[in-house]
Length: 322
Image (spheres, rainbow, N blue to C red):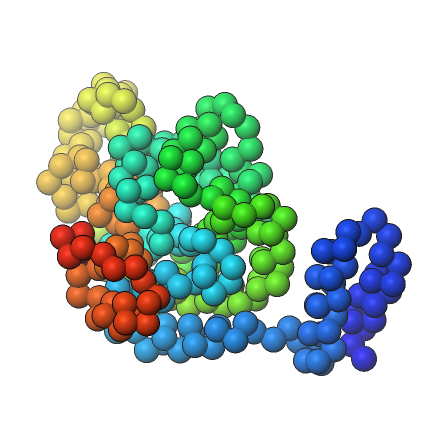
């Protein structure tokens, strides 16, 4: 018998300090380990999800599959966000099953500026729990919680990272309106499945959304500092008053625009953020790929409506995810 199953047997037998739900969860894990010779089997839905991702021909189809991910593993919604890209530049940086109205308010209220979840993901390297990141009623956490409650978005759940040697890093957040204990239990039960599916979705996102590594002349430290000032300042024109070692701020602005191949300094900030050149990588609405409402050209939508897997949606809410 598997040694881990034997260990669980001992823990279940003593039951010291464990409530009935925890003992039942351990007993279930022990049975699975014994049946599979020590290897936790996948959720039956995982193979189907992986197959659909492999067969997808468009980013919209991948988003559709990702939109099913929370339901298959006991959560309410899921969001995959690219936080660090290194030399890889993606045209779309978010796939999310959260409603479009949430992202509208996220942009309108500038929640990205002090999003406690994004801040936690960037500052910590291990798996995170949403309730721990939004705890507290002051500042960023209060603003985020208030907006989430308005849209009936659960702030309990789990987050884990998907990292690549190239420097690309994505975070997958699964949220629920149920209790923190429930979220932790679901995560423990399907940890490997979630990692496998998230990696597959991220791979597909790179494949369908990548615009190629930049061949541009690299920015020097002073140019990067200039872009950071523009990105973070409430008055971007203040960046034009910064002290420059060589030339003037105006010339610096022209150099940055030329190197990045853009026509405005604000476009330069967006391109630089996508390439991971500056710390402030605020999300632009055009970079978000929704899994609902229906995406124009989403050829799986009709079939899904027939299977009652998606609610019927008015045609005028279709969005082009090209």
